[in-house]
Image 1 (cartoon, rainbow, N blue to C red):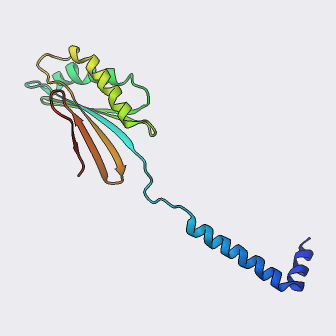
Image 2 (cartoon, rainbow, N blue to C red; image 1 turned 60 degrees about the vertical axis):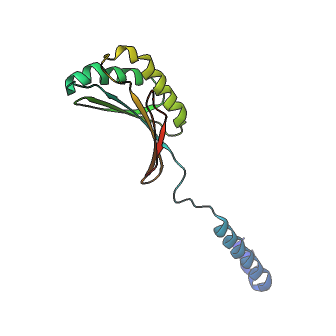
Length: 157
């Protein structure tokens, strides 16, 4: 079989040259039109819930605010990780969702869960503020903050 190709290449050099030229042209065209995206459009949805509890220490904030918010949020589907911080007067819970989850729907789910436990939080605690962080490009992010009683704000550094 290989002898046939060798004999054909020697007997018909123009045909062989045309086949090689066609392959080179098709390869060059394919290379030029090949789409390579160095920065794909991937969104890493993070939602933070921060609650201010004036006059409370870290342990009190953890037991009365942070744990209740964590318990409510942990029942949401597609939660990848949950990270929380309890400091003097402030509780912060950071929720990371799986890739492919619609960030707006995730923020709505978090809002619904937090609103459901609002009455379980101490009466001195301010209403929890929810912030949606979208990692759009490496090193760039966008945050949208929602605080009850204030209009939403958006920031992009």
